[in-house]
Length: 212
Image 1 (cartoon, helix red, strand yellow):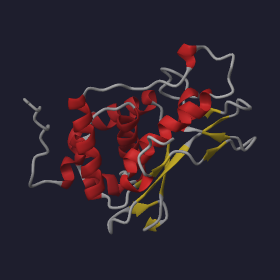
Image 2 (cartoon, helix red, strand yellow; image 1 turned 30 degrees about the horizontal axis):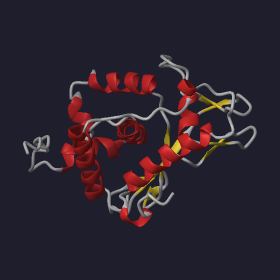
Image 3 (cartoon, one colour; image 1 turned 180 degrees about the vertical axis):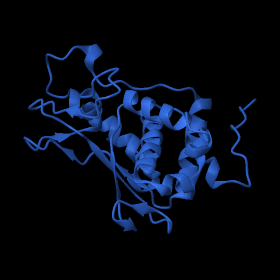
Image 4 (tube, one colour; image 1 turned 90 degrees about the horizontal axis):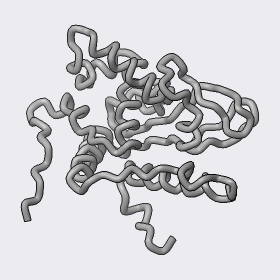
């Protein structure tokens, strides 16, 4: 489209946001029997909330240089159908906090979806060690809520989620944290508070509203 911004001028999260929106548009093409209310949902936020989200995206780029989050590289293990981000989300079982799978829209096969995170940060630890991508299981909002509650029940509670050392201790911790970031980004929630542990000397405060 002529009104789209050049990809090079966008942050990695803006690029991901554009890919999410583009996949929703593509999913609705060629589906003449689809009801209007079944089409991809756009999550509207106010300008103030959008500024908080942008703050989180910018801070994330500082902590994780050249951050890349790929949610569009998922294929069904049975029929090799390529699933968009929305297709993965549509395959989740609503309210089921014990189901870690999604359903292929082509053959209905259920499988555990994944996404990939990569950064050039020297302390970024991937699935195969430093410098490699981190492959994460994609958690539904209900599974994510259950896992977060489990962490919050620990003595350290929220401090664990904010502590970079906690994320690096175990693979499952990193997976949980990145799922939380990705879910906040997908549903347009501010997430700068999740990066507070990387800025111990500075409090990440909400951006003041523009009075003008």
